[in-house]
Length: 352
Image 1: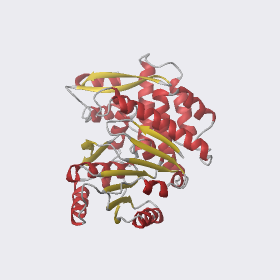
Image 2: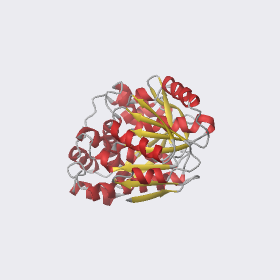
Image 3: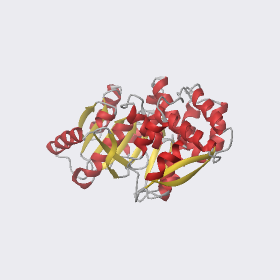
Image 4: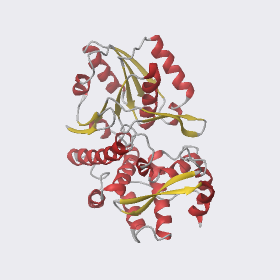
């Protein structure tokens, strides 16, 4: 088992390894008497039962609530129903919420834990590679309003994150590839050596190599933790994590979320790198390397939408502050620059 300590205001551990149920339960506070398991119905129910049985064997009452995965989980209606169930179950501030599933379940579980009685313990158990490397770490939690993503949100760090590789190995290649997009993004931001390693040894094609998988996941979490620790509440430096996301979110919205998050981020990175090369910001050849790397990890890099259409979504991005929007622009692998553009200038900057 590997461990990364995330040193935010309330620090916590991220555990990475195989068959970690016993370790997970051993770390739950003895003051916790009841637990709520929020789980994506796409997750193997035997895993949820395993966690629930282990908690019950430790003397805790367990309530399991299944959720439809995807963006439909992150609605005000879903949130309200779960809060009522938790209230009826008499969850107290010493009890805990578990999120079991992909990124949308991580977001919902975090938002619920942060707002129920002003905060209860949160344990995140990501079962997708994308959630393991992104949503489960960092403390961002959110709900959607209509087709607008993450409009209602909180910053609330988990008490524990457990990445059990048993469940990553069971993912389809398509779902696994989405997580590879986030891994490539992390390397693009701050680890050119990891990028070079992924170019030599595709994680998708070597996903059965347990040591390699754990090492790459650990490195991604170390990169993200270092960034989050400097800017926990996303006032500046943490914006760098949005590489590929500003255009990626626009692609998701334009597709009515038929293009999933990881795939959209891959397309967003390509679009932004192409723009950066055309403007002389990124080193020539960066785009070609990125396209090859994404293709080797099973990701479609061609965006089906015109940049003018996407620019309309970008102008309404939730990260707009004081009439400006932070844009993350690649320079080369291992280095990106954060630029702030006036809302009135964004469309011209993206399309000229």
